[in-house]
Image (tube, rainbow, N blue to C red; front, side):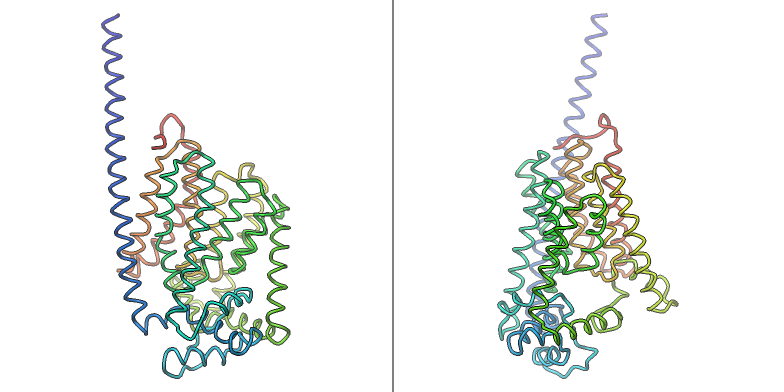
Length: 426
């Protein structure tokens, strides 16, 4: 019996030693991939950016020209005249160097409370204004990532790993794409990050105020705010108060005539056919239907999109009401679903997918179901995949939907894993 016991112990010790060696080899492989991936993304982005900013056609063809024209009109004609399409057209014609027909103008159709910031940042130099705006957006993204990192520190993620996750998150391709386009997605990201922070820390009013900042995309902000009415009413009240303050500021900036022009701009944008809408290039349900069923009229597809949006809001309200622990997958699912059913959504808005990715890391750390390095590698792999899918339209408009589906269901899958069968945090 003693001999058998010694042999048995030897076999067990050998098994664990072998498992430990395999685990170390896997960890080293992950680290090599992460370092190589981060360097590849950083170098690629630098090359793309310098080619872009030094090409007059590319830089004036970006979405930033709409923000620039809004800032210049605010400086020269006052904020109440910003939403005059003809004034925006004049500014944009000066930058592109040739006349534009009204349908070629990239309209500034964003909410008015950003106008004081644009009024301060822009100057007569388009490139200098672009750099100033991008620096502000970078600061907002960093702030959002730091806030999300708080949720990781609460579940014991190592500080060095948290920093590595932050670097990987900042190099997430939709984040870079939003910077290159000068889009205000960073405000949206920061607002949703504040909402997540408030939920996790129990600071409900703060979460609502944060979510009001996400009204730069009203359809996404409302989608996330309405379910709060049935479960976290303080968050909903904070959202109403914060949004009310921003609405009052907007009315003061625009006045009666400016508000009327703003509404007209929104109606033009809602039609979906003005320059820059590009519904066939969207990464949402409307974009999917537009590409899959070209025989349907655009108006019919928009109606279907809005109906689905309303149904999804109702379903999410029920889900938030019935789910006891919103921290295990519900936040990421809500954000991903908001992106899919949003009536207007382009690649830069997919920066919000960092929210479910951070949730996967948090759930993994809490339940010990997945190595943190594995999730970081996955984040980098997604960015590299986003870079590669442009080689084929089929991949370009298929892979992002699969990624969204993966990120939506991953926390629930990880939660269902049996602790004794899974890997522990590295």
